[in-house]
Length: 418
Image 1 (cartoon, rainbow, N blue to C red):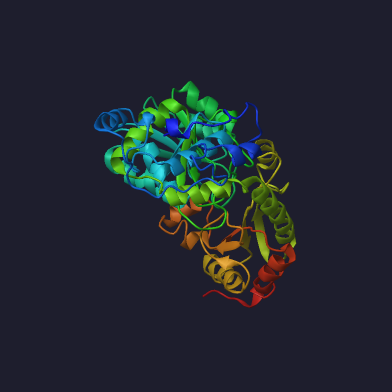
Image 2: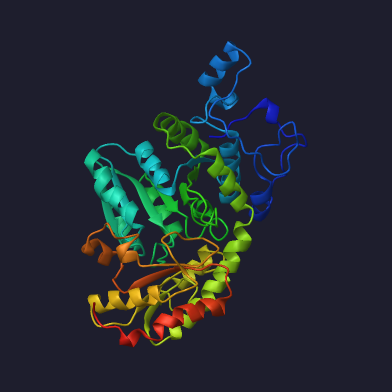
């Protein structure tokens, strides 16, 4: 929730309208303190001293008038929220402790027993579990449908449908949904469309401009960009941020820490240049992988072979993103798992890690990590097979990453089923 404080009023006036998101990524935030710091200050404090009891009472009753307690608001968090909202083109934003806490906050704020949600079956494994298992305990029903079949989303509508939730591109198969089409379906039914924009980030895609109502982020990924901290956020209209989500986060304490907010805010300053450079590297790697005889299939929106290539190029500013998934050739699931493990274990430059969006290239096995808690049926419905690997491409010299992957791919025929 944005908090205005008289002592932090801009000395030179507000930013002019119409600035490009790349400029907003550098210039949006709260104004400097009385010391005039150029790099945003880090406010590590749990509480705030009030000048008198009357001021304290007023601020607790009307938090927008000033800061009282960091579980309610903090200048570093406010600055991050304003910057991310400006970049996404939304009225407001609220920071959370992680990306999954942002999704939890959204569900708790919007849904009640008897409500219905439509969700992509290809989403991040923890998201599928949260909606399919955890929210179900409280009487919220979720239908999982094909990410790319707009007709399936429409067919799943019920009178009780309150929310459509998509992730585009998806984790890990990079499936792309038509945001405009899903927004129209949601709004015709009186529901909201929320889009997880983690893979593309506002550097490539702004779902609000395509009709989405809410945008979800894991700031842990590309927004930070260097694998340092956990963070999340919801971006959207002020009426939802201030009236629905902020009172709930004030009670539950799923708050973003000031230090993490400050770190991610600084990451936003280089987001565009990082993501575009990483995406250029990813395209080179995807093209190379597609030609390798040990690779069965490559999933990357920047390739013409991707089923939603044209849509992705239209929605993502003509850029494919920095995440690739690929499956290895094998006879059966057991051999596929053994062979992809061989490829992963043969790397010396890539990091074997499950985060993504880092400037260092990461490689992982989704079936046993990000989607490991799902049933085999759920994994297969999402297209996550035992022979699938996911690459989050960083900023290393591309031939070095090619050689790192080739070490395992070139010797894969020697690997039999475990």
